Amino acid sequence: MLVTGPRGTKDILPEASGNWQYIEQVIRDICRLYLYKEIRTPVFEHTELFLRGIGETTDIVEKEMYTFTDRGERSLTLRPENTAAVVRSYLENKLYADTLLNKLFYIGPMFRYDRPQAGRYRQFHQFGVEALGSKGPAIDAEIIMLAVQLLRKLGLDDLTLYLNSVGCPQCRPIYREKLQDFLREKTSHLCSDCQSRFERNPMRVLDCKKEKCTEETQGAPHIVDCLCDECSTHFNHLKSLLTLAEVDFKLNPRLVRGLDYYTKTAFEIQYAPLGAQSAVCGGGRYDGLVAECGGQPTPGIGFAIGIERILLALEKQKLLPVFSNTIDVFVAPMGIDMQGIAFKLLCNLRENGITAEMDFMEKGIKWQMKQANKYSAKFVAIIGEEEAAQDKIMLKNMLTGVQELINIDEVQQKIELDVEA
Ligand code: ATP
Ligand code: MG
Image (cartoon, rainbow, N blue to C red; front, side, top):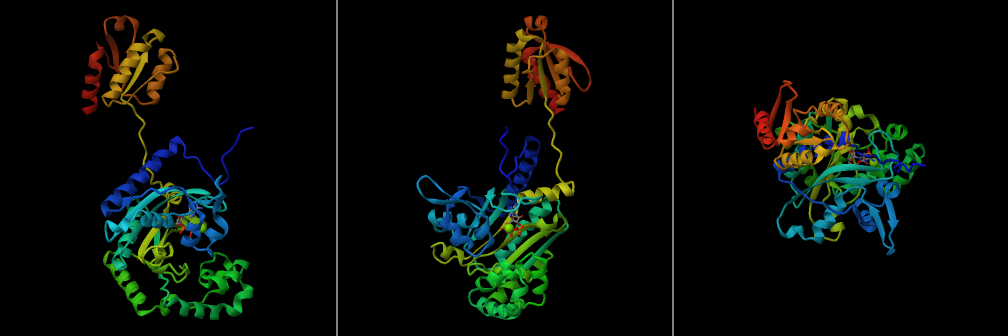
């Protein structure tokens, strides 16, 4: 019996990997423009890091982590997201000693025990950025612009940027109480998850996707009405910067996180046609996270974009580029005896940067010509016994149909001339 891949995982097959390389290239180009540098951390970390860095009352930690004990009895977890790991690495490697502001990005696989469906997998990929060191709203605006510019560059429209502020440890407790007062009589109508959230993390009730909970929380107080002066100034300043940059946004009071180390700015970018998996980008400020991970208090902000969801959106809008698989030369030996000469020519061409292929299946010339057409080869270099005896080959221009008997050491020059023309 065949062993299949684990549920919720996907192979990126040869015909799709070009799309991934394309997106990754656009990401790298944008990060270069914005001066974000790549950081690559391991795919597993001590479980403890995620308990602290994501929060024990979140869905991720409660239900979605791939946690295992290794042979040395350590509890390890496949990273479900990467902010905590970037902060860990930032502290462990003292990146703060080099510069006041660290601007970092990553691309890589994340692992969550989610319910697999279109746009939701157990191994998926995120592109994320983290800026560590600045507390002002300008960096929030820059980070949001980076996400917006990336999505625009890929050609996506129909995107909505949602914005909220979740306050800080000064003002949030007041809001939390207000919200609990509002929810108290409604708890029995909420889903069981939300009933337990009511005490532990009431702001997350606002985030619940269940219809009944959304209904019951209509009319809930908004956190932006409870912000302290500092948070409110920060939020207003951010909004004015985004307006200056001509970025549209919608305020969404339901965008919450509700853990102490998430502060001020929260944002999400949605691509509505993806339905239940419409969130393509989620981000926000986490001024308390570095201290939570054992460092000196350091402000930070970041986002993560789901690459599979971007790909789905690009497919839907027919925005994926068409890749050419054409080659310059197909080398066709007429018979096994000519293989050595063919192989030598092939190596030579490739060493000189000419895309070339030859027959490895030891087939006849008819089949080889078909192969050459499949590759849309510009030339076929036919190596026959008589010609080879005089160090010559027959070079066929596949576009014009013209065949020429030329010296084997002229092939490269001939092709280069034509490819340039
Ligand atoms: P959702 O509400 O869809 O579960 P989330 O709030 O769990 O999203 P974040 O933790 O903010 O998502 O992650 C950032 C982005 O990563 C999401 O906006 C989404 O594009 C992507 N993402 C999250 N979980 C998955 C998954 N299981 N499969 C594919 N992409 C995912
Ligand atoms: Mg999720």
